[in-house]
Length: 126
Length: 126
DNA sequence: TAAACTGTATCACTCGTATAATACACTTTC
DNA sequence: GAAAGTGTATTATACGAGTGATACAGTTTA
Image (cartoon, rainbow over all chains, first blue to last red; front, side, top):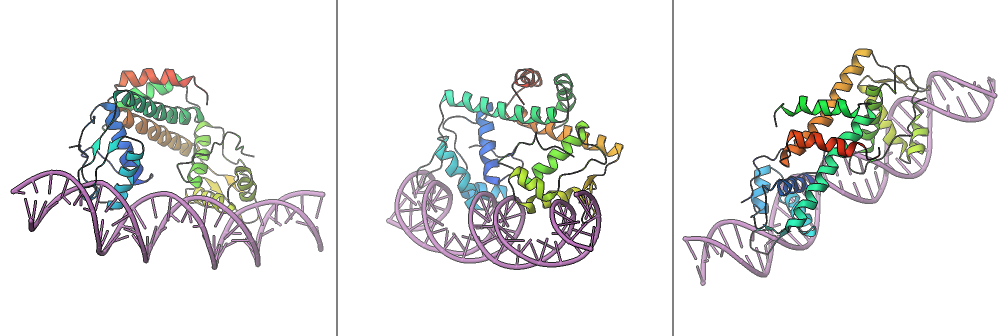
């Protein structure tokens, strides 16, 4: 059963996108793998304190993207192939890096300064 | 007059927040400084292809945060003190870094790998 | 002074996100 | 087989973001 213990709600982006992102980052890290059981819509909605429909929206989109498999009546499971794992990992890495680098460039920060800042902030929790 | 040539619209966050972010990053870099003239609400809305009310919302929040000064009938101007510039810069740097680092940690990327990734992505445009 | 531009305010509308309350068919489990 | 749990679907409501249109008072500028 996939754990949502590490899940932190963000206030600025839609909840269903945050759920999708959490699953994708888990897949990228290998924490979540093929065949793993998802918590049911009702259970996860209670756990996160959100509406079941919101969780359903996230699961429906994961299904659309071919990352989970659902059968009416049974629990949903992760369904993913090894090459897709790498692809997702690359996508997420690029997205996170480009977002940060864009902000740095707009603030006039050099590559060397940015590299030094990573080390400084890396230690600080989470 | 402050230029919005470098402004790129993002589809995922509210437009008024993107405008505020653009101004703040300009202040942090020194590109935008005390006394600089803002484009009028109508002019900027036409330039960005958005509604004047959306620009007004951004300007009203910048006024609330004490970053611009508006007089009814005249153009709005940046109103900011040197110590605030540093404060904004530190805030934005920390926010961008922590966001990226959090994603890396969730994907099981080490500090060394992340540092190496910066160099690889830094060259690729914008 | 008059025209053009500015900040400010209001009203009505659409759309996406999220909530709330059900309902039904299917699977698992006892 | 019955109960509990599950995926799926429907309807209604609320709110923020964004659009569109309009109005009015203050400032600039020709």
